[in-house]
Length: 119
Image (cartoon, rainbow, N blue to C red):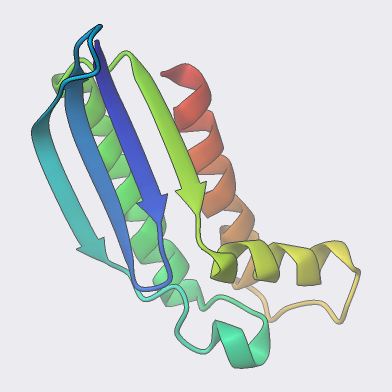
């Protein structure tokens, strides 16, 4: 079975595609890493920058293409604490973020989740 895993980290987004046998043997087919720096300033401000979110979304879109080409049948995606904490700030109803900043945090998170559900 061909599986994919995406890790949306504080500095980069990683994806790995692997064939996993019934016996549990894993053979890596592809590995990709994109530097997006989501965590830059997020730990002090509680917000993700628009630039880093745009880079993360672009990376996820590119990863999605690769998942299709590699015919991945199942996908698991996880997000860094920088994304989770930024989403918590938004959920608590704190001061609204600057235009164009927080909206993309949920897009990054939603994009990861939707890709995981489809595969």
